[in-house]
Length: 160
Image 1 (spheres, helix red, strand yellow):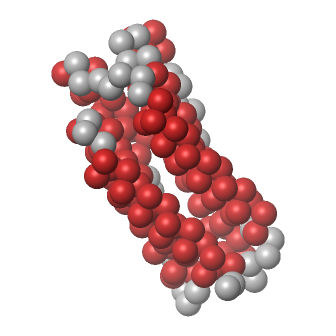
Image 2 (image 1 turned 60 degrees about the horizontal axis):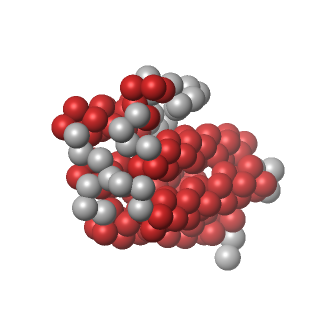
């Protein structure tokens, strides 16, 4: 299996993981976030697929802003989850997947043949970093739902 085929499979597996996890989550806000992550992974799959034959078009993601709005809405409606260890473990597993994706794109960037593909691998690694930090914030959010948003004033997410 070539690098691009492996990347496509990795993105497809990540998308499926988020879809499965979203269907198991009863919290509407977190389900929305997981579906957003699944959509992002689908976009990544499409980008890598296009790399095989053409240069993909630019992709602009607003996932961090969108998720911030979901968190604010959850806070306003009082919709929280308790610190359930099984959920935290699932988010941690998703975070591990994102870390593997970051590492994969960073390691393979010099192995793809074309300069445009190398640039896209760097871009995809940066996108996966956003997902990683998002999951880090979700873990913190479900661990401390009553104080997380006010105390942090939602400054956990780093701007890129």
